[in-house]
Length: 135
Image (cartoon, rainbow, N blue to C red):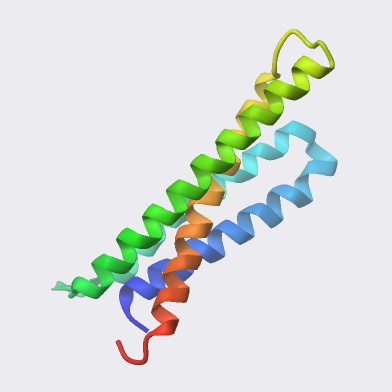
């Protein structure tokens, strides 16, 4: 397993754990459960795999291509999800004749977009690494 694959697994696992923790906290904390998204800060820990006792980690063209493709897929997925969710929220608020969309909904939507982006990025990278025969 290469260093970049370890980073991808870290992103994926942290995003899944974050969503499980936040979902578990919602019944007790309500909108305060959004504080659980602070676990996303652990994604930075993936960079520890890229340093090894003073030696630089070799990142080749394949790693760069996988990183770019997974990042592009994650960002596009998050943006499209955001776009559809905002359209649905606008249509819903017009349907019930509400004066606007709640800021709590928008706050949750932004945090969920971060999770979607990094989870899809990690998942795509893991799948691309696993499809290859040798590192």
